Image (cartoon, rainbow, N blue to C red; front, side, top):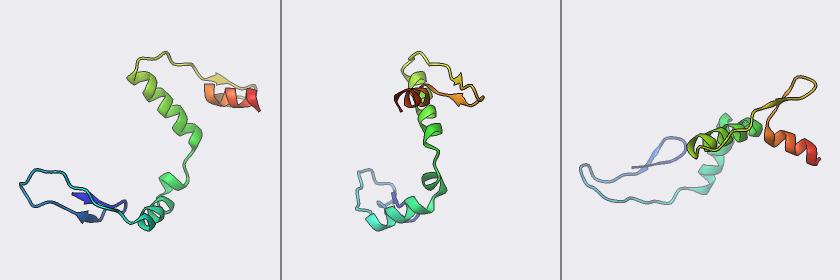
Length: 87
C-alpha cells in the first residue's frame, strides 16, 4: 500500500499477494503537506538536533557531552555552544 502525506491511499496491491509496489507522488501535494503540518512548519531545530544527537549516541554507544548552563541560566548544548564560539 502506498499512502500520501495526508493519509490517502494512492496505490495498493491485491490482497494476499507478496511483491514490491512503487508509485509516483504528486510533488505539489508533498509541498502542501509540509506547509500544513505544524511539526514540519514550526519545528525547533535546536531541539531536533539535540534529540538526534542523543539517539545517535545511544545507538552507536558514543559518549554523550553533557549540556552546560549559560550565565543567564539558559541550557547550552554542545552544538549551540560551538555556534556561539564561532559567531
